[in-house]
Image (cartoon, rainbow, N blue to C red; front, top):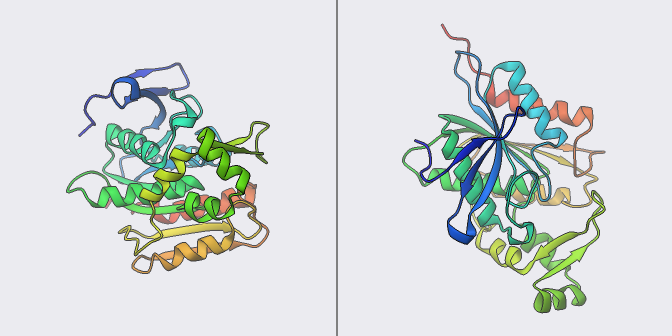
Length: 277
């Protein structure tokens, strides 16, 4: 069943569509791209969830879509509010807000089975999507998760412990602080709302039951999410069939050709359907 109250319109020949999420002054237009499956044999839809300040046109997202196109699988990508082609202010963004948008787009497309592929912050949102789906009696069945340099609880575990007195003062007086970005000329902006909301969405405070196999890809030269964080996540996934691949010379992006190949192979392990008899 499609989510109620969502209006979608074709954008242009790129196939990007929009749905409205939220009500009143909180409503924002969320851009998404849905590649419908083109084969008769059963297979899950690949759902790409981007990282902080990333969008659905990044190299990993496009590689996932290319793989879907080559195998006939369905694929779903979206831009969170304040990202890419979506509406809304980036500084209004929180994990809860971006989680709501992800679930709304998934519900709107209404696949029967999905594989979640989450990069960095998208790994956190993937884990929260899995939690929310497990609360339901219906909805898509989660067949697997591929998490690339996942950053669950990054606001409380990676940002808050490292805050300087100047940053704390900026959060208190301005409601945000800035820091230089290695990936953009524009600085990263972390708001008080993002940090406070992050505490409400913690997943590393107990057993995480995804109900599906999980494959984590983590670079050991990641300056943003240390590989020890992936080891911590592993400790919270004891009930699932979880594989951790450490890439000795890998950075945070893991977007080199060999990294993309690893990612696609991990996805293939969860998405190749048996040949129909």
